[in-house]
Image (cartoon, rainbow, N blue to C red; front, side, top):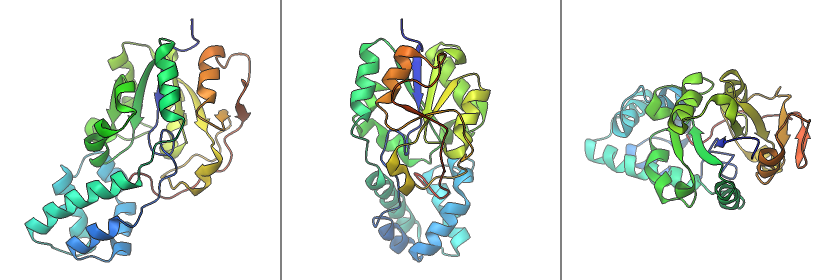
Length: 251
């Protein structure tokens, strides 16, 4: 039997390659009549407000962002900007090469899988189009739950959907939003993905002092599931979390 009955993954920076806001966000800024740097500043400052869904749906949220930026586009431009922002966030999202193979291998071993993501309205809309979608048994999005990591509600929501206790679940994430500490407090085993390319990844509220197990690649998850963490750091893992970055992810 595997050491864990389920593996829950973060999305941005974990199942995906490092995230940066790309050039497609310029189109959104142009539509609302706002300099792209000013738009990014508001998005940065409001990430957790937006990711918790407290500002309303995608259109209401962008209207609030416009107000904060001091611009007031007509409704037709605002609606077009919502679509543009969806495309921009989608274009920033590139799955890791190992994401689908690792999820497929877990499924073949009878291990349940899930996603627990701090995200804004765009990810729930485009995730079904991604190759990982049919390989995930449960999806928990902060924008739908109304809470952000490290709130226990997100992790426990995934457990309820899986029908499993927290201690039967392994949580894997890059460490943004204090997610690893949050998973531990919820009763899960947590491991940090410390892939070398994450030096270029921008995240909110990172936890650079993480001292728990860490992996260089998602492939190491399979070793953890097979062997568990009880005997120490398994093959493919490195000790400690290493430095974290602070910035934006999926925002």
